[in-house]
Length: 362
Ligand code: NCD
Image (cartoon, rainbow, N blue to C red; front, side):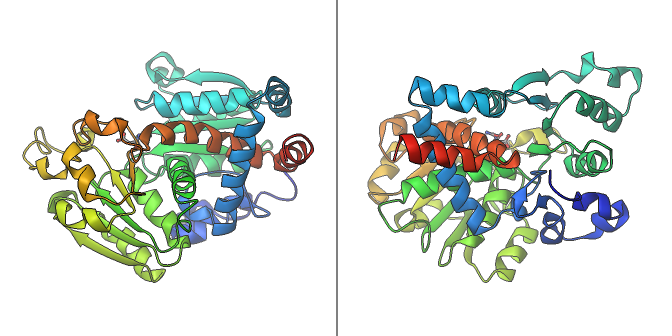
């Protein structure tokens, strides 16, 4: 890191009171992400750069010599994956991204085998981990915990960056990055993301991927967002306020079939019943009309991207998988490349990748 860590220059009490955009300014160092906690810390330029870098990495990785070059970039660094909430795909995606760049990896997935069982606070556990590693990648059910950890880590003699791999119901910034990368690629030949209609469907109130992506889409002029869900699962007012502040168009509605013909992307989500506050709460909500069925394929446009952060339940019929407009498996692969691009950027390696790419692949 060059210069002083901005998070070591502010009181925790003051930081906590800031709105997300203000907080975001303390997480980037010289325009480059250091701690990656919030969608709000990415501007349009960063999104474009990350997408370009991800594509350079994926093309470089096609040859053995390219793979060898990538795997030497960060082979002197170690990453710790600490996931105290179920995850396989995000975990493996980060794992693979670290491997591509040569980082050595350790993991803690089951906190019942850690010293937290002896009464150690999660904050102390994380601080201990950070002594052995150069990067922490963390998934946690507790909203705000990654912020607290980042603050603690920035106020040690050895600040270590932390990446939020999903925190509570509030944010999942790297999923939003991979979703943007997927949209960039899907709309490459139809004028980019600008001006497109993006339809979110399902559990929008408790789905953190939608919350992060809705914000990133504010960087694309002319985008209109549709939030289609039963009333009880609708998107939070805080997200709509952000869209209002950015002057974005949106529609909140309950009728899925009606918006289908207008959609350029349809982002399906599952019901997040792990957050139910009483048993059977989600089951009592009728979500049957919020499923994408094979018959809907006839009603959507020829370029419409059908997306899903996965895991899926019944909200997309498996018969849809074979349609070229179903991009959810591509999202998974894009996730690995964009996470590799993000980690390379945190450690300032994007220039070397560009240079190698220009010399060997252009
Ligand atoms: C999402 C999550 O964990 O928020 N999954 C993921 O990261 N791929 C979505 C979900 O669990 O429904």
